[in-house]
Image (cartoon, rainbow, N blue to C red):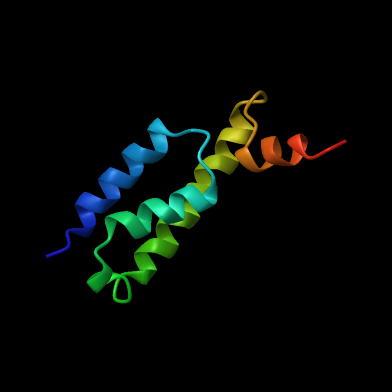
Length: 80
């Protein structure tokens, strides 16, 4: 049986330990840690987790003027 509370704690810990992770990384974490048989019934949890991840990153950007999201780092790499 899938324990959504355990998943939420694991996701929160993952976000704290991966401050430069991208939204795609967060989505991959969710898909890797929710059993395939539960993906459809817990899709709301994936959406909620990714939205929380985005909120955390936006908050960090406001609190830390030196924080640069991964997306901005990637965009800078492609500027000539």
